Image 1 (cartoon, rainbow, N blue to C red):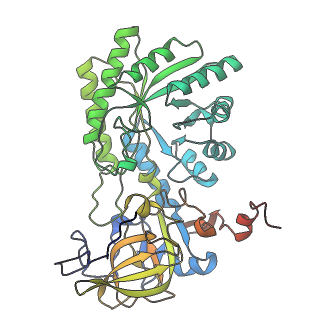
Image 2: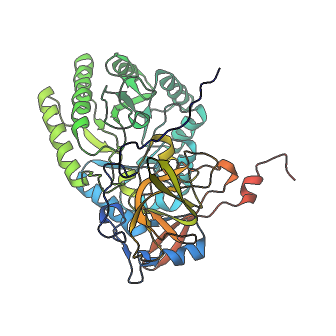
Image 3: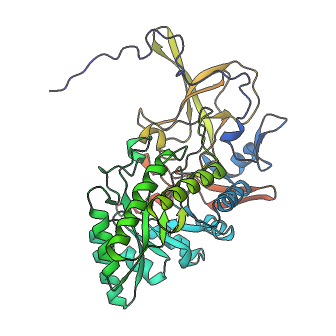
Length: 468
C-alpha cells in the first residue's frame, strides 16, 4: 500500500524563497573573487573572461556545456601547496580531475600524484609520470590493478583490508619482489561534512579501524611479511573540510598507533599521510583556510603529538585535489528556458533551465552541494531575483545551483557560468539520458587547448551491440 499526500507550501510564513544564508547582492554583476580562478574577471562589455578568453567566444568555438580550466591558476595553486608544506610530500588527488595534460602539469610543478583506479594509473603512466611519484589508492583493488601498479613500480600502495594484503603478498611473491605499502586506517573522527564524504568514522567502507584493533593487526602482518615493506599509516578524515580541528584528533590517534607499533616491534615506521579533503569556497559564505594556514596548523599538531609520544617526526604527506583544481575550473551553460513557479504562500521561484545538468555535475543531487552562478555573457541592470539553475534531465533533483540571486532579465540564449567546477564535475560525469559528456578546455593568455574533447552520440552508440 502506498501513502500519498498533497504537497503543501514548503515556505510557510516566510517572505522570500531564498535560504537565510543567501543575501541579496548590492551588485548582481559583481564576481566574488574567492569563488573564481585568479584570472577570471568581467570585461568592460560585461562578458566574463578567463585568462583573457571571453566565455562567449569559448562557447561559440566549443559549444556548451563546457568546462574551462585556468591553467595558470591551477599551476599557481599547485606551487602554493608545495611551498606551504615543504618538505612534506604533496600528492595531487587525481580523482578530483585527471587527464594526460593535468598529470603532466602536476609533475612539472613538482607534486606527486595519487590515483585510485586502473584507469587513473594508466592515464598517469601514459602521460609520462614517474611511477615512483605515484601513490595507489582504492578500497577494493583487483588483482589486475595491483599487478599493474606493482609492475609499473609505483612508489606506494595504500592497502585497505586484510584481503588486499593477501593479494599484494601473492603478487609480490610471484614476481620475487618487495612492495612498499601504507595501511589506511580509520581514526574514529567524525568530520563535520556530509555522510557520503566523511571517511574516518568507523561505520564506513574505508580502511582498517584503530579502535577495533584491525589496523595494528594489519601493520604487524605487513611488518613480518617477506614481500612487503611497511612504510607507515594513511589517514583521511573526509572532504570539504575548512580547518584543522579534525586532523588534530586523527594525528593523535594515528601517532599513538605509531607508538604501539614501536613498542611491539622495536622499530619506528617512517611515513604518515594525513590525507586530503581540504575545502574550497563554493558560495560566498564559505570560509576555507589557505594552504599556508593549514600547513602551519598541521605542522603544530604533528610536532606536538610526536613530542607527546616521544616519537621522531615521520616523513609527512598530504593529498589535496579539489583545493588545487576546484577553483581553477568554471562550467559554462546556455539558458534554454526561464519560468516562474508558484511555490505557495504568495511566493514564486524562478527556474532557469540550462543545457547541462546532473550528468555533468552530480554533486548537488548526490549530497546537496551548493554552488554559485553568474550571468556571464553580458551585464544586466535588472533587479536580482532568487533563482534555481536546473538541467535537462528527467529528474526533479536535476539541480545545478539550488539558490542564487541572478538578474531578473536572464533569458534564453544567455550564458550562465558556475565557478569552482574544476573538481568532481567532469570526473563524476555520466551519460544519463544518453547525453554526451562536455569537453574540458584549458585557457591561458596565449590561447586555448582541448584537454578532453566533447563526446559525441557516435561515441555512445559505438558501445551498443544492438545497433548497426
